[in-house]
Image 1 (cartoon, protein in one colour):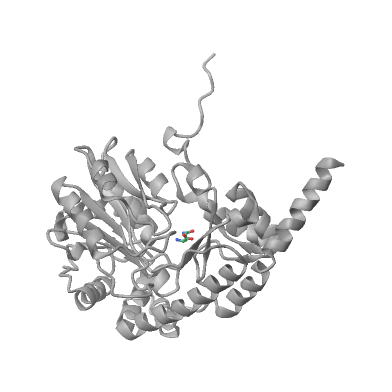
Image 2 (cartoon, helix red, strand yellow):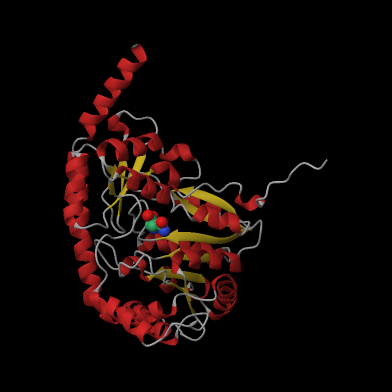
Length: 403
Ligand code: GLN
């Protein structure tokens, strides 16, 4: 008799459930404060919500053009020109996707052949691992070393080989909060040019940064033709559930990416694309205010974490704080995160989920601060008891084991 084969394809075997999404579910069970998954608990801008309602009422409810409604692509082209002096032809260089999540996987499916190497800076947003697996790429990890989370230029140089097809860059960075400097981006750009590799850059946090201007790597010399720039509305306009993202790339790359995107999704939600086109008109004053508000939220959470003994790393951008958990006497980040949500009532993401070699993140936890100041203050008050509750838990388990 033939052995029963697994009903699942080999490419899924290495997949684990997303730890970020799992923590959100666990948090709901314990009624905790969710500082795990990065979604805002505050309202999207009124004018953006009104625009979505108007679009639905106007019956813009059928498929948009597969690579994005004309109004959104035109608004994006204007935005990239005004903010970054990037020349983006809306007819040939833009693809609107179902969030930047789809943007990343459609891009990699379009440009990577099985066996190609893709350089990933580690720690990394957990989707990049499965993204590489889905297209059969071999990820090559280069560490971002704490406490500053910089890469060693020589290590990065060594990671590029004749098999390198692409590098994934994420700046501002999730989970480290790093914003790569112009010098670091120049080094990456030089390696891409020398090795004829493509830079796939996830810039979803482009407007959430606490000093200086955002530098799209596509604006560096010789990079426009070899960069795929990914971003989206989710974080900038606090609409993570809308699933509207986009890809800017040279026409030849865009042509391939659009085909994958079309066959996988047909297109992003049509009325919401209209609303995001309106959102982009809010422009610079809106982005400045967003960054200021996040700065205040960052400071509340970082101070609370410091006071509670977490040794947080103050981020330069994005809305996450990585913290060292060793002061609390837990050897394992997953056990600590589970304990924290059930006993302290605050959810974070275990650090190991951002590493290919899980042990590198065993001493870390990530908290997000995309929450109202009230909720962050409440989380701070709960976290202040972490030391006390941890030592009580230790006492309890000691007396249980000696009983
Ligand atoms: N990017 C966000 C995070 O890291 C949300 C991830 C998700 O669940 N899509 O938490």
